[in-house]
Image 1 (cartoon, rainbow, N blue to C red):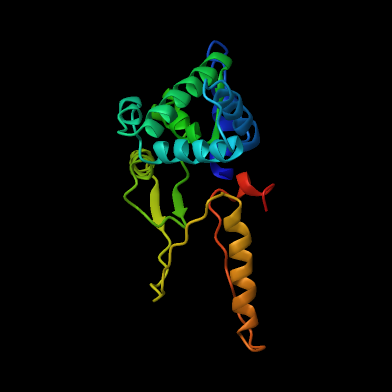
Image 2 (image 1 turned 90 degrees about the vertical axis):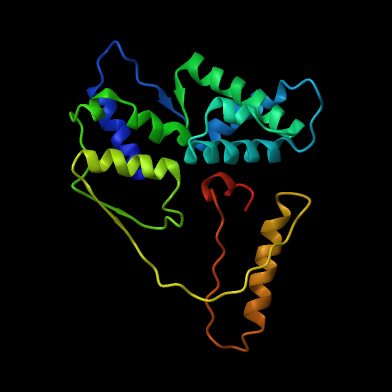
Length: 212
């Protein structure tokens, strides 16, 4: 995120005056915009805050897999159709007010002619850490653009570890945080005084700090 922010700031300084730079939203500002869009729905909706978080996650996923507007609108359930409608309204607000959110940041950077013409280049070496799926379309697109500019792409490789996985469902989004903490405390209690390391991974942590 910090690297993309640096690229965004560098491009902002180089763009001509007749090409206004969009204002980059923070996750909280994006959530406010989503809240306004969802609040315009004709049907009363329960748990609007949960829907806002799900909408932010869905938009981020759509950019990672480079889905088109037609693909977003091509869902087979009423929930898909409703989200596609909200997303169209959200996109319209971004265009109308010249705004840019975090999920759309990388695409905006890669579409800039300055980068395509080589007037702004990628670093000579790019080290990617923590990417589990190297086949995600947006990541592949980034790698192709960087390699065309002469960058070397290196991935960190962690050795595989055996583990057992379980899935647990919760009725409310916030319930999962309490369950995760209780699970960690229970694991520590069964360690019988032995040193133990417990990790809890929370996707999009920045958006969920208030809930925690």
